[in-house]
Image 1 (cartoon, rainbow, N blue to C red):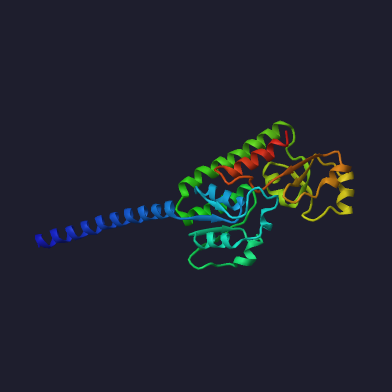
Image 2: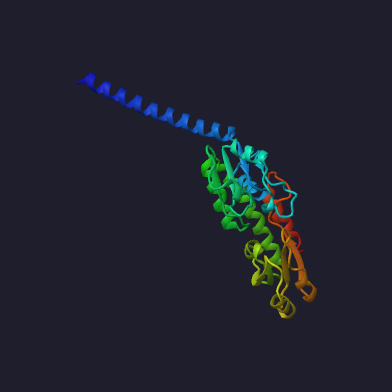
Length: 255
């Protein structure tokens, strides 16, 4: 009986130790795969989401210096780069996706939603991080991003602009809402209409917020007393804190 008990305890101990070792190996393997994985993104914007997910050394296909990166025409070399990647992050609105399709053999195609709101950035960064195993770093980077917007909101409140009415390009409403502005009306992404111009002339707006990647608000600014500012979504460089820098530059225009 004593031998049976000892044998049973030894078996249970070996199973327990084996479980611990297996868990350690799994974690180590996940970390190794993340460090060695080749991550490619469609544009500087999707690359910025990857950065917020805790990833470094991400390659973007469309040049970051283009005014409207989604229109970039993909090359054979680009296709090869994507085909050789482990993970390809895209939004779906890029022209290149008409050529690439929704799947590439051997590549994990990760589709995300792109806007600069706290809710979307948090959700999409976490989505990527869950795939790459970078949740801890993602949490830190997203927290810094959120703090940037919250600090901007506080400055806007201190300036007496909380709830100020804005006439906003449809592609810039997300950050404007998070900063505490009232989106009283929207325009774009197409050319300003006669109704848009009439509204700009008669509406009591504090700001007209346009989109640098496809600006159409100049005619509105000509007839309005509102301050005309132009925001961006796509970072000008693929780098760490790229989206945070975009938001900081956008907020700075409000001052």
